[in-house]
Length: 352
Image (cartoon, rainbow, N blue to C red; front, side, top):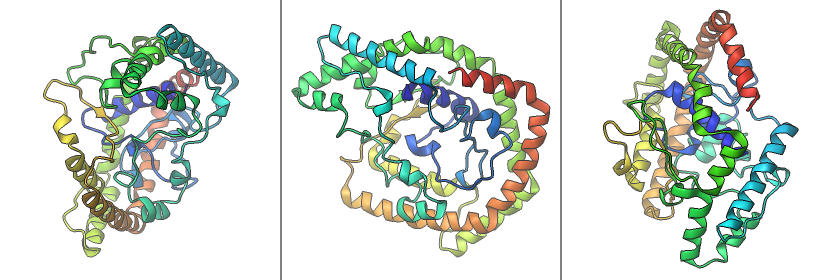
């Protein structure tokens, strides 16, 4: 199941990220950069990135974005059948959709663009793409079933399918800052089916907990790369380049992207929903842009694209090569020192 695999990848990202907020579901996606793979990609997944143009360390499921195996497809079919049976018991119609019929994400073409072309069209993909709009709604039989219901019946349908998430505004709370997991929530038919097929969330978390030490070492690796003198000098050169392009004041490589995220938060009111002290350390959501002031959103999108184009251009000329040189060197050392743990992580993820 796509959502289950995404959730597993998400846990790995959270473990690396520690505290902080990821402002959109697109934050862990970047346009295609090059064919040069990270030395860690073999173990952490094809989509692994330790920074560079993406500006953050990400981990994806080992095996990356390749085709699903027959075993994985069988699990997805079983889950769809389970959802349909559960929804029937709840009094609703749900059509089990074979995984083979799922269309590629409408965002695939965008994220297959080279970085410069992506920046020209979408900036960072923060305010320029409405992540709240579902994929494949036109061909999804269940979207059509839901659409035919009355507003009240739609709410009941959503509650039966997604449980408490149906009324949470699409927000997903991750690991609390104090490390204590929240009480179990009603995850609806989709959540029940996921547990039946893929195991409980507690079991999946337990699978990841044994790699806590590895994730801590990966975070230390990120810090070593960032403090490498080659990267420090490249960051300074990037800062100067951005200033020359009319965007002064950025000192850290993520500052430009983060500024766009903050501006979008202000427009959507997302800052009002930030976790309080002791609350969840990470909140991920996709606030709809439909209710955002159209003129202000258009202004932000123009600003985002202009800033991203300058950012991408400056990274390409002053930063990326030096970062790649430093990160590759440090990652090779890391692989040599952590080969056994990395192989265990890769093998565990391959079973998911």
